Length: 221
Image (cartoon, rainbow, N blue to C red; front, top):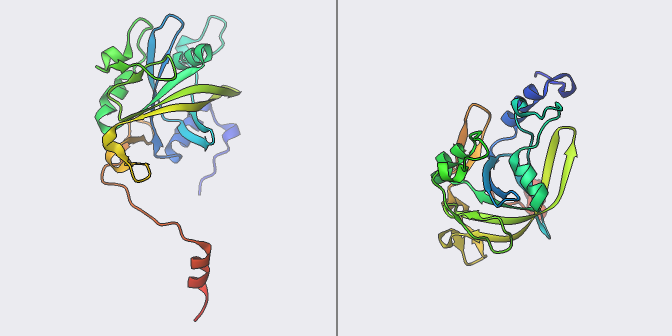
């Protein structure tokens, strides 16, 4: 088995390795707003939930490519990071198969005066608890308020509290209520090179085993 000493590797090589090992990753198509009211949309696959009381989500958001470094030579945070830093608000829009192409367009490094949402053919609707709009075509959206942003070196983790969730009626089982994840058909990010994975038809169930049951099965006789 090959061993990789991350301290001896470049950031690019570390990135190639970790995105191929932590898979599949859910995708957050994040909408945020700058001080002029301009809405930005960008996908992030370093995304997860981190707590339920309150509900916390995390996004790993880096800096712009090296070509966009400031004259000082210091890295410049991506637009999403700057917008969240300024407003303290953002919306996570869940990416389904039907949004895959639009999500990929939103990942293009457009100039500041070009709207990713417009180029991707997406529309927005007003949110309930935050000023940042959500994406109408998304099967579900989470309105979030920044709790804190943790920066370690050039890595950055944004922690947000979910204030409100919007979920399509067809994806809700009222018995729980539960989310019918098998109907949302969300997609996940795999390793680099534009590789993704579908969840349609790929979900299987494993019941959690109580310790008492496990112990009884292992006892002889």
